[in-house]
Length: 222
Image (cartoon, rainbow, N blue to C red; front, side, top):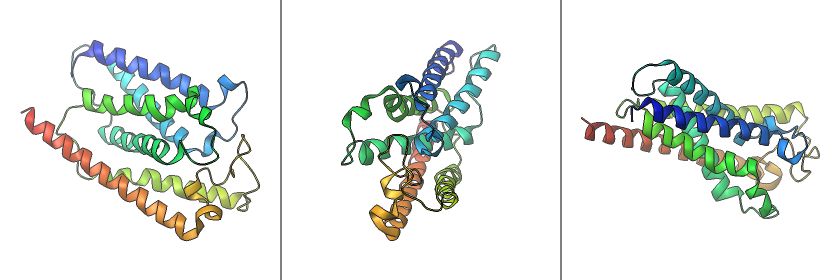
């Protein structure tokens, strides 16, 4: 879809919700400061995507004609896989984890970061980027995003002496292990390794699937 006006409306809506989501991730709507925001993959992946979408919005606002969005297709793809991982892991693994208050799932921060923004970002890729242009290496480069996050989590844990008594702002989980599948106290060291391998594999396979979809639609549009 090359229509500039449609792109401008969609990107503006996303960026507006993105700013609301950032405020929510910092605890604005709960009238507290969520000081642990920096360790959550959900937040970091959303911040990345919001940055890309603001770049798209600027490009669209500057152009005079109808055309596809061309802001760094590689970064767009990396962000899409990253945010879809947020969407899938939360809705499949985390939303109903034992001990979690179900009401947490319906807060503004959760709904925006785990559902609305991931879906909108992915639709933006489908609607406004030219099909058939995705490179085969994009999924493999994209895997570096979650791998870098894993390194970040464990470096952060080491910096806190692997002290799991330091809890998040809610006081429900260790700060250094923001997700149960990264917590060796809950799933064991081998369990953490297995979860990391499984999620990385799913990430890569999902990326290849999107490359295939892109190539298929690219051929149909010729």
